[in-house]
Image (cartoon, rainbow, N blue to C red):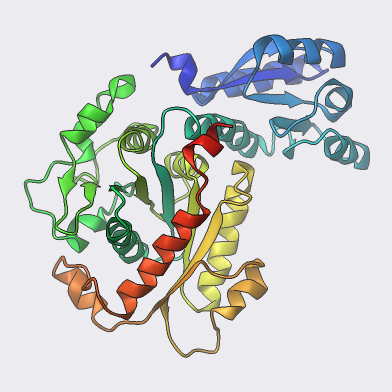
Length: 366
């Protein structure tokens, strides 16, 4: 893959030359974006967009408002003002960022346009990222049982452990000590292909393939490795489930931005709801509108109910998994719960609902 195909292509339109230079250098050094053209006014901006067809436009509202409209526009200003905010809204900007205070958010937003292009390029799979903002909500449990439910729905599924620090799926699934891991792919860089991935996947007895995280938590992995693994897995399966860590580092954000669906796992307590709210705020530059869903795990009689998800997050949960006292013992022994029972039926309903709501590959490409 050409390296230029692996970064978001940006046209820059900022009036102050020193600010434009700062933004250009920041984006180019990030490894996630590259400025391919610049403009000084609205006319030049329109010409550059037509000729270069960039993934993203970074522009001052005063320039963008007459130069271009669209979801790929990111408005930037050095100070916040009502006029600048109104200009960004009128131009249809995806986001408004103060420079340099919010430069990381700007980079996330720009990089997310590349993720959208990835989703519509060579994938045959839908990618479901499973995240939990609070430790202990059951991300490992949800991701592994959801993968099994997809197989029961007659879908091929690859489960990717994108948590290289703790690698909880290895224990929870009872993977053998000699199973290969994604750590063996860390030196391939741009050359990583689906055939390389086939050499390291481990087949679980429930019928899904697993890409295990390295056993050595200290192993240094390239920041883009997890996304490359997900992309490779998505070229040959029906569904890819990405088991995410709590951390909101660049690797996690890249997988989230690239996913067709983000499942945020909740438990029925205030701290879980608060943590999820903060995580979604951190993910907001990734333009996840329409792609976020909530899964309530270990639901039982409680002061806080699944109905409160609708009240707090303005959407009902996609799935509610009942409390089952056998879960800790099953995970300690590297087993999934039986494919029949209340928990399995809950995951079957969740998998069916995700599949029904997923856009087809053709829709993604349009």
